Length: 613
Image (cartoon, rainbow, N blue to C red):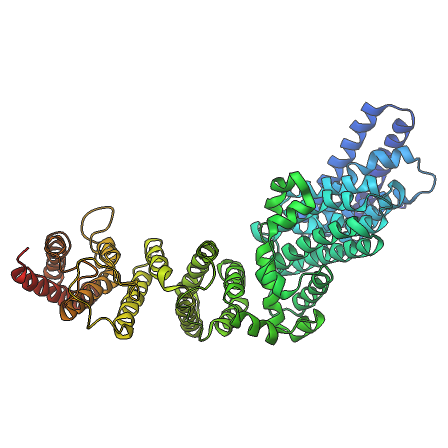
């Protein structure tokens, strides 16, 4: 080496030293492998990996350290040249192929030139080792990503390699892809949802490779026929839907790259026979997974955790982009009409689309489109009763209930008032679509499973409005004789259960009066409901809820109203002469509650005086 002065000499010497070290280790490894000394060759490969790790760590820890980056790139270049050598023994290539893909993938996070070089090295291994061997090696490389801090960049070279492996496999195509897909999906999920160190550009690169893998599997499908084609298409469909969900949650909704990748995935989804209507109403992940994985289905369900979300998002993206809908040859107008006119399909669609609303990682724009679509298919739908079998509609209620819970969360957390307003309209529309005999139980369950005082108040107000409508619509209210706890078939809300609902708020299950002012919205709403029921039953001379029976009047008076009066009076006395903002807010909050409470007490006292039993 010619002598150079200053810093240049140091840089040149370090680069040369790195190249010499790599050459020495590789040469030693090759000689040991050819000599059949497996233990020593393994030790030499471990030395090489440690040296590469030290170079990648130095370059990644300080992006501005140019000498460290030059050293790292020289090392990859040297390895690439060595693997490309036509005189290199196959035994040496095989020995290096087990560890080097992991080692070189760690360099991918430094810059694009390192990524390209790492991919080139893996491509050489693919060429010399064959696809079947490299499939397991690259899957093992992917699995190692959980140990990496920059996992998003690390998985790019093995993902790139796998997309080439799939198209190079000569036989047992389905079995080979079936092994790799769960590993790929688990890694994608970890990077997309559980990792905080990946930036938008890295995630775009990850999903660009993920879409490339989908295209590769699609190519393989076209080579097959019969049962193998059917199974691989089913597996591809699961892969595409899971990717679509993870992509939608990770890449900016406004990014054109995101739309292009969604378009590609949607086209493949259509090839797999996944129509919008089938995704909304008939797609069952467990059934498809059972078809693909057989008895091992349960072991693979974790990698398919967001397939249901992907099924819903396939349709939502068709609403977002005309290009996507056109590419899938779907008529959303016809689908809307069909769902609007078919209650069973509508309930199934609601149960599917709830996954978009409940997926916290998704952008609000996608949730807005989902809400608008749901409003379209439920507009003007009033169930009254379900014409099918009791067991049939009962089977849909758990899904409807969880959908209502998802809508509730949107009402509570949506950043825009317009979205909250539409979500409330949707809540009422979905409730109206539930058979009358089930609606009260659903509302009661929603109240029981809600911590928000404001939302409990909203649900109780809906109960009160339902009861008011039943009174107005019933032709037999005026004619009904005074009856004790007798349920009228046209008035399913007017049952003793409504008093249990009031009690759950005014005398919480955990004991004692409610916590005020924290639950003041719910308490005020419960008092208004109690007052309404008491006055309506009194005026109509009915007692369907049992509110007028002496035992219930005494219970309400002694266990609900008087303890609540004591609590409210104490809080008001404590805060009435205090003029800080919290005290003023507390008094203002409790004022309307106090008025309704005292009116309820007056009504109960009046009824107790009239009661003779």
